[in-house]
Image 1 (tube, rainbow, N blue to C red):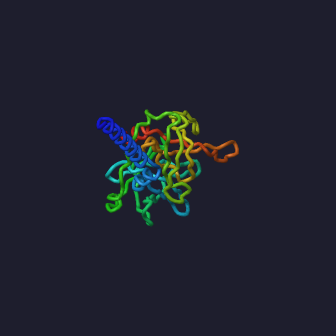
Image 2: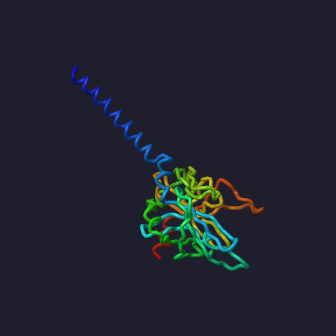
Image 3: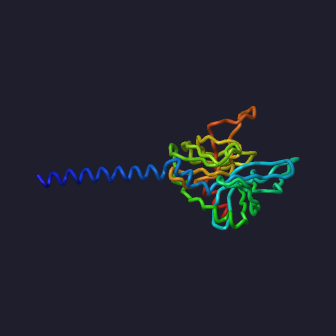
Length: 234
């Protein structure tokens, strides 16, 4: 009888342990927890020259104040010529003021750029994003897009991976992108595409337009992390 009673207790304890682990995992990888973890890893970007301005996002990649964003976030085109904005600044989701940043590196073809924040107080607040493995993702996987959507604030949207590698031709140049169905708006460019664990797998880059020039919603295209890392290390 004691042995049977012990087995019942043991079974109940195992069930409680499994439930506790399940609840812990659900908490650690819930959208709220993932968003809170990225509060200091994804920032708003404001670029301007005179009365011309642009808004976007950037992701913290190291402890030296370097952030990755899109080239088109920190540049503009005039008379078929590209120019860098004279002023680039960033703002944390928890702050009111913009902090000046410098463009230190860019690649027009990859549509990537690195900006650096020199302000030491701001640097101390920034948190390096955790890198994931874009080669391990598959269609149907959960993903999250975090960025300055609509230039309203840093927001998060949950979606699924439609394809881990879609070849698009943009102005004659072909490139591989991660396609997902996250909701993104103007200002999301340069933001983070995260895997289901909240790790960076891509940089949000573009949305497609139809023949009339209208945005096709429901499709988000991100530059895969391996391309981003190649740019950073080059």
